Length: 235
Ligand SMILES: Nc1ncnc2c1ncn2[C@@H]1O[C@H](COP(=O)(O)OP(=O)(O)O)[C@@H](O)[C@H]1O
Ligand SMILES: [Mg+2]
Image (cartoon, rainbow, N blue to C red):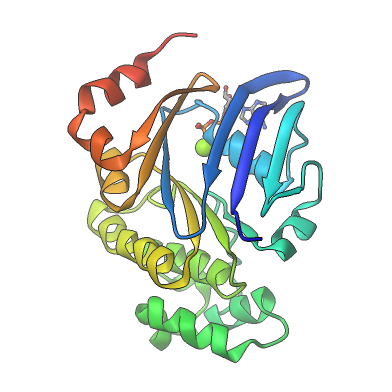
């Protein structure tokens, strides 16, 4: 059954030292959730644990009701949970078309067409090497590459990293549309609090490895003082 992503009481970290403790969150189909918080809060650690790149020290990861804790990233992505990492995972020497061939090796033409509908700017760039794309185009490629695998839940880690706010602003509605039209669940890790909350249904603030504040995006937008206070929270 399509229930989306459910993280329950996740504790995870590096070399036996916890970077997140007892973190719980959900992303339902069709829902955009903004995961906010300062640098080092544990946002990427949470995403890497969900995708299976990092073995949790405690807690569970459920996907569509199935316990996927400890599965490999390959197995997890086959189930329909995808991550666009902050490093973007792009090969500079490969063309845009090559990236789609790698992402959807069975040549799902319909999926590529649907994706090009979303990321129209890539249509004219199919034979260009990724290294020659602008920063915004590279981020678009990173997102599009995930879209062609048709995930039911997509996690995007800091897509705005190194991009001009105007470009970020143009990418946000694409996330919203995917949620509304395809029922994709989206977990958006963002530094641009306001831009993220404007397209999100809910917001969660992580700080020092724990959830410090959460609620409907609209409430968080009108309650910026509490959001900002949760950025300062001490352990
Ligand atoms: N590979 C790593 N090895 C050791 N510590 C790490 C590693 N990656 C992140 N950390 C630490 O874990 C904590 C959480 O980091 P991270 O999840 O990357 O935060 P965020 O994504 O919110 O900026 C930080 O204290 C960070 O220094
Ligand atoms: Mg991070």
